[in-house]
Image (tube, rainbow, N blue to C red; front, side):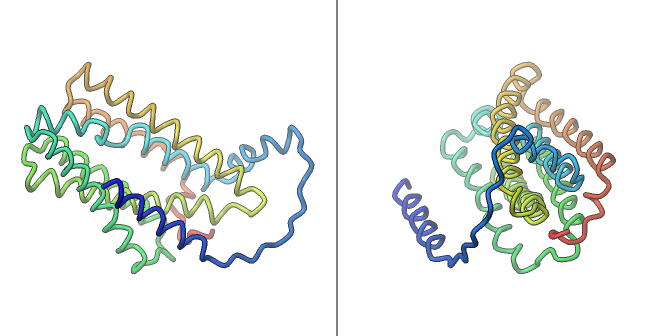
Length: 234
């Protein structure tokens, strides 16, 4: 398994190295306190990007049940280590399927619709998995759907941030985006375990799902421009 992952990384590295890049000489602005925080100022002024980052934050911080898969495999689905491996593989299969299908249906005129459609599908799949007791059919299908819908949502959000940010700001905005995702991942897993310990695994998943949906609705109301987005390039 580790050998296969290593080969995949090497293949990806060679593919990236084969991309031809036309490098243009850019003038570097002098380093200043204003330049240091210019990425935050730009995000605040661009409501579509701010909405996408907020959406991403809630999706990762309060989004799913993946951190609790070991508990589901052992205590709820009663499958043991092999079942945990199958459950995690189902997420990957869904993500791979979504990444293969998505290029055949490019999001040129319906980016906002695809974003919210993916979010709705993610929520439904999480609820179905949370209440399922059948690993062979229901749980695996739910996780495949969860992985596929998550890919659609992530692709739209990431593309919006990348394509609607000018070249001179892309590094700073990307750094803020990475900070959002990285920290919320860790905090989200901590919150999952703590909530499951207090209220039980299934109630924790369903309650977190409901709370996440409420926050997403709030984001939609705060950033109507995100919902109305047609093109990824603005």
